[in-house]
Structures are given as C-alpha cells and as structure tokens.
Image 1 (tube, rainbow, N blue to C red):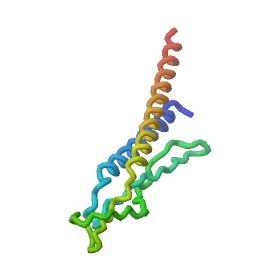
Image 2: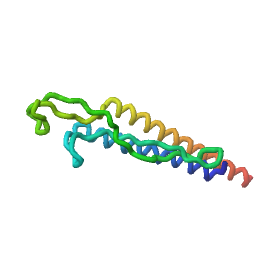
Image 3: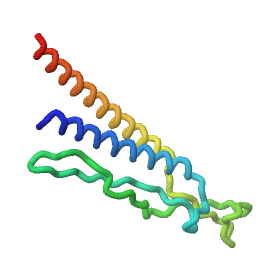
Image 4: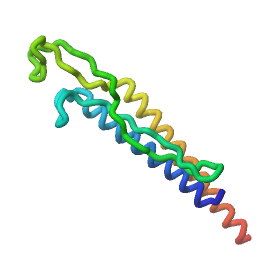
Length: 134
C-alpha cells in the first residue's frame, strides 16, 4: 500500500464520520419538530456506509446514502398542541435523544481515531524522510 493511499483511506473515514456527526446533529435539532415541509413529524435520518473496494484490499469508506428511519415516532397526548389530532394526540419525531447522543460520541471517537492514525502516518513519513538526510 502506498503512503498516499493510506492518507486517502484515513481521509475517507474522517469524511464519513463527519457526515455521521452532521446527521446526528440534524436529528437532535429536530427532536421536537412535529411539522415538516414533507408533512408530519421529522423522521430520523441515518447515514449508510459503504466500503470502497479496490483490488483485494479495501480503499476506504463512503456514505452511499442517507436514509430515513421508517420506525414511527411516539404518540403524545397534548390536546393544546397545534398539531394534535381530533383525539388530542400528537405524532412526535422518532428521534431518541439518548440514542443520538451515544451515536454522536461513537462518531466523534471514530473521527478522533482516524485523526490519530493520520498523524501517526504523517510522523512515520517525516521520520522516513529524516533517515534519508542522515
């Protein structure tokens, strides 16, 4: 594997995790949104990762799609809410704040691991270049 390919693989991992963090942020920001332009409550979004294949060895990861979670959100009794139905229940988003926070921490740690590996590879390249000077 070339050094440049190593940087490409690590960069693709950081990019994928950044997309995951952005998606989680959007989910958290809309955790109470009961009315969207599409109609109905906000639906949780989930990025779908896909391996980038190149020969026998993988060449990284990419986000192939951002899908909408089909699980329905809870129904909450709030007859005074502007989006309440005739029975007084409001369809809420299917966003679980605790689950999103765990996903955010996992994505952040994965991003940090890629950054650390990137810095280690950079340091190895620097040391190799210094060996040639001696």
